[in-house]
Structures are given as structure tokens and as C-alpha cells.
Length: 534
Image (cartoon, rainbow, N blue to C red; front, top):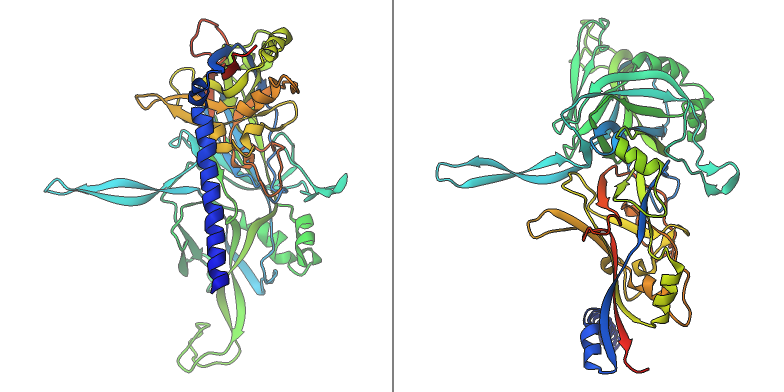
């Protein structure tokens, strides 16, 4: 009992120390200017640093799932944005064999082959009714999530057999996972599906017509109603049954179905693509995606005394052949990847990306995910100005980089990410002990009227290192991009390298460093303390 109590007090003590440490750090961070004013040996001030910012076209993003710690969402669809132009994305995946292997049995006939990919959904509250007493009754319903663009516009989805073998490991260096980027080309083989499509939150049920339970395929003998347990809406794409009869059913005794490696060499996966002038583009998680073959085969069984299973008018027979409904699931597994295609058909953004002014900077900054565009930020373009700042020997209390939106915009990112462009690494404020992601910032901020206004990053540690008079660090160019959850800092592996995944196609236009008369131009504000003792 004594040891148990001792352990409790130890843990409580450590917790209090940690809590007081957080409070102390926060006070130091927020109230340092007040403390220094009380100390008459210091004076405080702030200054605005003029910087250079311009755009960079990102040719590709990493799209595979071969890094077990960082798995991207898939992207499928096509859309036309008034600012960022046209984009489409294909979803590509290998399939895994069923757990019990492939055995279609005797005289198997396919009823239906369907790809089923659940949407991302969220719960939302809507008004169900208003009673006679004017009471409002609300109802919680499911709504589709992570769909961008015009949801009411139809476009075409195709499914083809993939002709390219997808490696898990890099053939040039088998100790590393293979990396696939969004501009890679693939071999596309037989067409398995082509149909118009638009997202549908009510697409929760699949009806499977069973036509082969008797000897007349012209009649529907039964209809199976397939519904997910949690009634999650999903995309359902009907594939060519004849193709799978020839390649799967008639080929089932081949060693190509002995194991997953042989199977993936034989059938290399599905290439699911979109086409159209406009529509919507969707983020999807393929964790529960699958291809299902619904079929009928012959089963030999004995009838009960009152049964006529083969419908020949005789009851109670032994060893009769019965047409039986079956299903076989091939889940999406192995390597998953994608392909993005863009057309910046807006002259203004095309010029900004193709011919950025790296010396004077730009009036507008274009940030978009999914191999879209980033912005480069040079905080100290003039070395003489930097040397003068270092010579001032300031104590840096806080340094903020603030970037304002350029006009009213819709479907903008809720968070941006700032990182060291030259080294492809995180800024120390994002992972240092006294700072961290919450202080580092990057979340979209709103004005007093509730309209999106700006993004702000606190880069105090980064600026402190650069302006350290005794040991100044060389400044590096920074990059600003759309945030995705693979950008988080993982303290377990102490990895500060920023991965090049980016699958969210949202974009935002920000104000650059020009014109200098614009009070909302991108700016670096430094709050400092300075010793009065000379």
C-alpha cells in the first residue's frame, strides 16, 4: 500500500511540475515585455521587416502508401476552379486475394461484379420539422465530406485494368519503399466500366439480381439487398462480368491465384479515372474499399423430406445439384497510388507560376494542394540589412509572419504549413520544447465579422537563431503550402523532414509583398527587448 501511495504522489508531483512548467513558459512567452519594462535595464520595441515572396509550381506530389507512418488519402474526380483552373485525378490500387483463396466451384456463373468505395462522411444536424407550437425538431444525418467543386455536375468515371506492376520496394534500393508521384504515367488495359457519375449521399444500398438459380437466365430469380452495417454511403461501380469470367472464373486453377504476389503479377490492379469539363473531386479512404464478385455455382447436397431444392418436382432426393448464391471479396490492398493532371487555364495564375519575380516579389501568392502551387518566402533578401539587425543585439520576444487573404474566397484551406524550403525540414518553432505546433500556428483566422482574414505563424525560435549575435544561423528561404496531416511532427522518431505528400486540392490566394503601400502585404513583425546599458 505504501508503495502504491508513493507512486501516486510521484506521478502527482511530476504532473504538477509539468503543469507549472507550461504555465511558466506561457507567462514568459506572453508577458515578457511587461517583465522587461519593470526591469529598467531594458527597453522594448517592435519592427517591420520587408520580405520577398513569390510562387512556385509544384509539378507533383507523393501519392503512394509505401510509408507505413504516413498514409495519404486517395483523390478521385474532376473539377474546374475559377482561380486555379482545371484538375482531374485517378485512383489506382492493387487488390488482395480473399482470405480463403479463389475457388469459384463448379459451373460458376457471375451475376454482378462491383467496386464499392465508401465516401468520407460526417454527421450534421438539420431541421426535421417545426411543430404547430413552433418547436423546432432537429435530426442528425450523414453528409458527404471532403468533396470539392460542383457536386451537382455529372462527369464520367471509367475503370480499367491496370497494366503497370506496382512495387512495394524500390528496385534500385530494396531497403527503401518505392515512391510514386502524381505525374507518373501508367499502362492502362481493358475497359471495365464507363458511366456518368455525381456524388450521392443516399447511395447506401446495392441490389444484386440473381438470374442463374434456374435454367432460364432471362428471368430474375431473386434480388439480394446489400446494405452496409453502419449505412455508410459509398460509390458503386459495376464492372464487366465477361472480363472476370474469362480472367478469374475460367482461370481459377492457375498458380496465378496461389498467393498475393502471383496474383498481383497476373492482375495488377484497377485504374479508376475521371473525365469531364467540370464536376467535383473527392478525397477517399480506400481502407474499406473492395471489389466483390456475386456469382452462382453448383453445390451437391441432399434434400430434406419436404424439400425440392432442384425444382424437379421430387422431394427428399440425395446428392442433388443445387444452384447456390455466392460472393467473393477482393479488398483494395498492396500498393495504392494516384495520378493528378492540371491545366492552369487562368492567365494570371499561369504567369505567376511560370514566370515568378524572384527579385521584387509578387502581389499575389497562390497556394493549392495536390501537386498545385506553393509560395517561397525570403525573409532577409538583403545581407547588409541582416547584418545591421544582428549588430543591434536584440533579445527577441516574439516574431510573427502574417499573410492576409486577397479578397473573398470559398473552399479555402483551414490550415497552411510553413517549412524550411532549402532543407525540406520543419522550422524549430514547430517542434522546440517551449514552442510547438499550437504556438507555431498556421490556422485560418477570421475577422470581427466572421469572415476568413489571415494566417499567422509564430517563428520566434527561428528568428532568434538567425539574429543571435554570438552564433548567427544563416537564413534560409521558407515555403508556404497547404497543410495535410502527414506534416505533423512525430516525437517518437524525431523526424523533422517534411514529406512531399499533398492530397487536398483546396486553394487560397494570398497577398504578397507588393505593393508596399498595402498595409495587409505579407510581413514579418519582430518584437524585441534591448539593453539600455552600453
